[in-house]
Image (cartoon, rainbow, N blue to C red; front, side):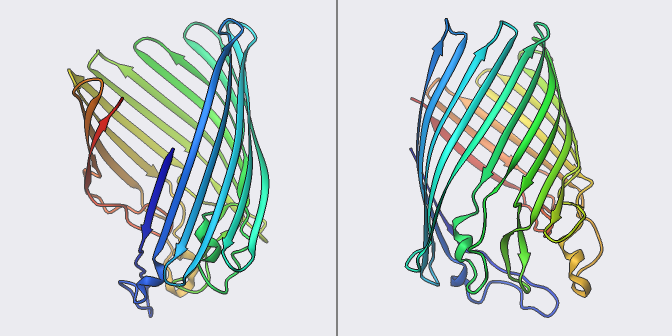
Length: 356
């Protein structure tokens, strides 16, 4: 059982002839967002533990409120899911799964803005052991994402009630070579998504969420991990992809995300203390959103991003642990999306966990 509550009070900024700074009607952007979720599942081992059957159920309720406009929305989501892993032999097994969902939305309470629909999300994956250390895998899965509930009434007078879920398919296959001291994983994938979500300009500085068209991405991912000792290990990774979007009414695709991602990490454990240092690099990024604004924009691509984070965890015993997370150690002013919003400056978080 989980409950999440968010209170959102964003600021707005504009450029060249538009007022910028704190929103003069700040209350018009104040949101209460609440989500209550219950999930339960049960697993059975069958055929002398060769196979596994999982059945589960999820029920969630979302509520969104615009405190300035006194508008509310509600969404209920009921889901049943199942998966079965069947072992054809000691070397080959296949897992098939399906999730059925019923979504009921009253997305503008009091205005008869209700709708409901059903969705079935299948997945199938296969794993074949070429040897004790080398395996081949393949996976095909459908994805399904609902639009944020508050977007249905985020801007009065704008046509956002026709928002559809973003859905599509992802296919991937690859090889894993795993030993006691090292592992290498390499995979290729293809994504094909319909009704992609994106923010559309309706007159600066206002934007609304829309289904803009099709999204495709083909890529290669490589990861290497090495255990040098019981205390020390490191990992290296690289991803090369071609993310692109074709907007409705256009016959060409354009780049919509970074094409290059590099990662590196170091892990060190001594006694009850474990620590890690992780680095992320994004390169060959897409064009800035402001390229399309004519005289208000400038022709450039988004700069590369470099992010260095660290984490330290002390586990006193099996019940008690504490973690210190340090984000953006280099305190860089990197852009995180095509709108050139800056990432958070250096920040830290201290967490205590009790497990029972």
